[in-house]
Amino acid sequence: MNCTQRKPDWLKIKLPTGELSHEVSNTIKLHKLNTICTSGKCPNQGECWRCGTATFMICGNICTRACKFCNVPTGLPLPLNPNEPMEIAQSVEALKLKHVVLTSVDRDDIKDFGASHWVKVIKAVKERTPNVTMEVLIPDFQGHEDLVSMIIEAKPEVISHNLETVRRLSPHVRSRATYDTSLKVLKQIADSGLVCKSGIMLGLGETRDEILETMDDLRKINCKVMTIGQYLRPSVKNIEVKEYVRPEVFEEYKQIGLQKGFSFVESGPLVRSSYHAERHVLS
Image 1 (cartoon, rainbow, N blue to C red):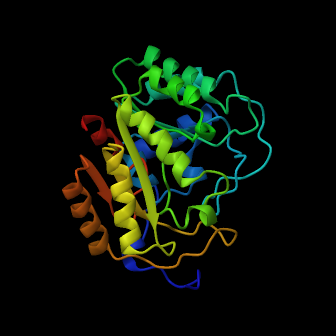
Image 2: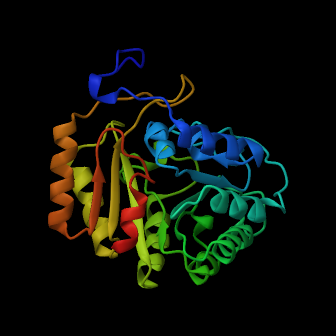
């Protein structure tokens, strides 16, 4: 499919507006924070910011990996910001958030891949705003169980790690992560008793059978929450869109996922990992 082809009407995106949206934007700029809302060109930025919520991206804004779907810059990152845990916690408090989502770039340049920094941020937020619930969307930490355990022991309410796509396409779409390593990480999360969550993108060339197989793989390890969204090509440097999947097909996958036993399935063209994240605490 030609990436310049006009997107269908159901993929029109509203830009952030309103007082709360400006407050979130100003707070992010004041503390020089990174958000996946902006770095990832999230289509739900307007909806989330109008509700006073944002997904904070920690560990810098340069990733050591080069996944073909991602818009986050790739290269050699700067050293970790030791003030980031405090700055994130202060921002969560200032915005009066009830639920916060944290994610990060991959930091393969650091010995523990950023795991200890992750724990510092989680603890800082919990200490400053103990009533705030939290979801963390973590990297794979190269499959190291001891590092995943550090995140589990910090006890965020939801731990998410995305498969991103089906098994067949994973080597082509992701730069270092593997399908099986991601499943291993997700199983460790699920076995801990915390809410386990994962997500995939459609429109990369996957088949219906492969999508259903991915659902089955997640249910086998007791993953409780799944997100399914449309891949949107962020730039000409990224992999092309193979198909724009219609909204009714996303709805069908939602119903199938619920029948397979997921507690929540967020499925729609504009759904992203943190979409309606506050609901998933109840899984």
